[in-house]
Amino acid sequence: MGLTYERILLKLSGEALMGNLSYGIDPAVVQSIAQEITDIVADGVQTAIVVGGGNIFRGVKGAAAGMDRATADYIGMIATVMNAMTLQDALEQNGVPTRVLSAIEMQEVAEPYIRRRAIRHLEKGRVVVFGAGSGNPFFTTDTTAALRAAEINAEVVFKATKVDGVYDSDPRTNPNARRYQSLTYSHVLTQDLRVMDTTAIALCKDNNIPIIVFDLSVPGNIRKAVMGDPIGTIVGGSCEIS
Image (cartoon, rainbow, N blue to C red; front, side):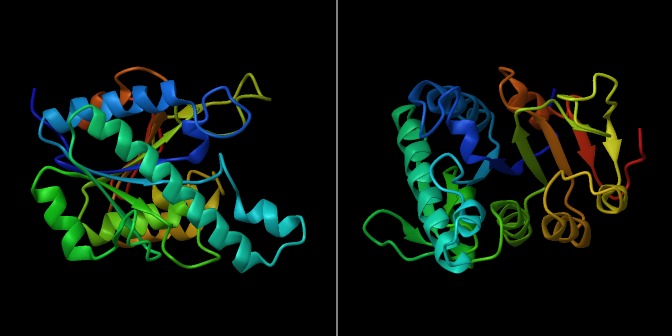
């Protein structure tokens, strides 16, 4: 069976690296994610990653506690670079060449983000991990994922989460919550389903980039998504609501 997607953008939350810890990074979880990425790279998938920083610092939370919002967001961006470097180390221990490209200049630890350089790394089979968000406060890493996906001509955005798709209500509080198999961008926006923030959804809609939401904790799910297996929920322009 051939690949459905050959160039992907994988969006990981900072919390995904935390495992069952209350804070920080669980090395075992990072190694598990790295192994899944190693497997798809071995299949020839050009892989870019945007990682959040919520396991270390969340800008919105800092602002709510009285910090200047822009300052809090910049701190959050630095946290994402820490996560990106952690992923890079785990992947390179698996023999996968990896480059961290930061939207905030940190030349000792990461390359500056340059679109053409990122694409060239992907063409050479290197995993690219985008750090420091978009480099701008007031924008989420979800928006960064949609932006970078458009810039590098990714065929799809994989939103790897702790749930197995998009529901019509919170499945943790509503046992009758219904999981969607597919959705249109417009339905996500009008129903405020919180797949990603509205800016990210609008960017994907404008550039016709499908979004697949699935459970990262299930082993093999990243590879299943790459192969086009029907997991999670797909959001796209040609999708029906089902």
